[in-house]
Amino acid sequence: MIENKIDKDLLTAVADLHDVPMGAYNIRKNGEGMARNSTKNIIIEPKKDKPGIDIIVKPGTKNESVHIPVIVTASGVKDLTYNDFYIGEDADVLIVAGCGIHNSGSEQSEHDGIHSFHIGKNAKVKYVEKHYGDGEGTGERVLNPTTEIEMDENSFCEMEMIQIKGVDSTLRETTAHLKAGAKLMMIEKLMTHGKQVARSNMEINLDGKDASTQIISRSVAKDESEQVFYPRAVGNAPCRAHVQCDSIIMDNAKVRSIPEIAANHNEAQIVHEAAIGRINNDQLIKLQTFGMSEEEAEEIIIKGFLK
Image (cartoon, rainbow, N blue to C red; front, side):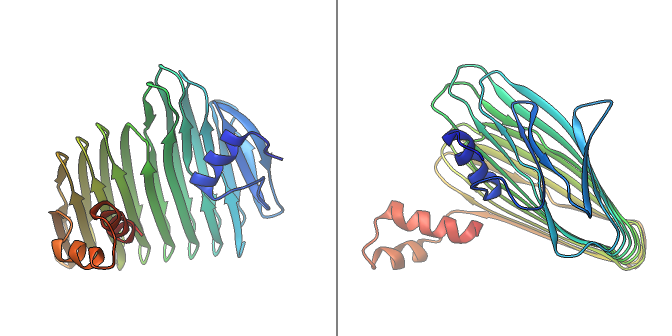
């Protein structure tokens, strides 16, 4: 049972957990293991040489999930963890991760997670990672995730990376290599406010015939915050890729979007598009005719944009 209210609130925000989940899970708090459970088909083992865990999903596993949330509730904590996922051939699994930081002190609290995915032939993975920060302290809440993905033939992976609010600084580094027939869908959703800073660097390498990727980035920047997005799709074989970056900019925020496409094979088909702009004035006016204030109308539009 999870009794602490702060723990419960963080786990609800980043992993939709109200208590210890069913199935396989590993809950980490302030740099230490809080709770862990393996199942017949999903084995979670602590690493022997460095902080972190190995998550082993047996071949043929179907309709199972694993939760691996991290929470930080103490000011001044700097947590570094290495998580390796080994997804067996023909498996189909949901992975729910995420990190929540509650900082009530004056020192910086930070979590750096290094996740490596080894996805077997014909396997399917859906990965959801949410980041969230709160607390009345002046100390910064920092999250720096690194994601490395290796996909075997005809595998499929959907990754949804969401930053809800309250994170003062984040640097996301993502690299992927796709073999023949592999498909990767990357979805980033992000909101910054105050003086927060966020940067996302992404490189997807399509190395095998008929590999494909879709990269979708949606963000909202408020107040004095700054965002930089640098997604890169590299076609090294006959392949397909589409990169799309859309941002809403408000107040005195700054947004840079730098989508890059590179073709190293004459049958690589790669497209990119990017847009940055304010909230549509017609949408605001329409919602205000229903009795909403401008602030309420903006909130509805933002929620729909990031949904």
